[in-house]
Image (cartoon, rainbow over all chains, first blue to last red; front, side):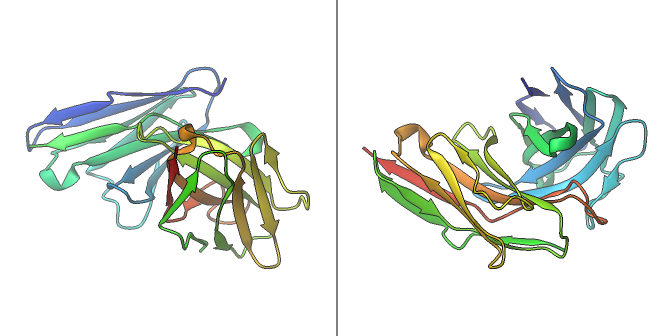
Length: 115
Length: 117
C-alpha cells in the first residue's frame, strides 16, 4: 500500500509555455500533499504544502504565481509551472501524507527540461 | 526553525559489512518524528525507517536500525550485512508534530553510500 503516482516522469518544453505535473495517491486519501524541488546531488527543498479544498501554502522565496498548485480532491494535487524558463529546469517531487503516523510517501518525480 | 545536518557527504562499505550514517538535528518542538529515506539512482524516495521522538526504544527494520540519542539530538542509521542494492543517497529528515511547521519534513544534505562487491 501507500503508492503515490506522479506524471509525467519527464517533460521537455519550450520557454514560455506552461507545464502541469500530477500527483495522485492511489490507495489512500491524502488531505495534505507536498511539492519539492531537487537539484542534482542535492537535498529536497520544500516548495509548498497543498491542502485539499484550500489554497496552498508556499515556502518563502517560492513564486506562487509561477508555481500554481491545485488540490481539488483527496487523491490528486497538481503543480503547474507557468511561463517556464530554463532556470525552472529541475527535478520536481511530490509526496502525500498518510494518516496519523505522519509518514510522507513520495512520487517518482518529474524531470522538467525547459529549452 | 529546525535543521538537520549530515556531516558525511559520501560513505563506502564492502558488501556484507556494516556501515553507520550520521545525522544530527535541532528542533524547538517537543513532539517530532525522525526518518531515514533512501534515494537510489531511479530517484524514487523510499522510506527506510521511522522513529517517534517520545519512544526511547530504537527503531529497527530488518537490516536497518537507528541509534537515537535524544539529549544529543543525534539519529544515526546502521546498515548491517550491506547489499549492492543499498547503494543510494540517504537522507535524514525531521518532522515536527506541532507548531507552525507542523507536518513539514526538513531534510539533511544527504549521504551518498557506495557498496563495493
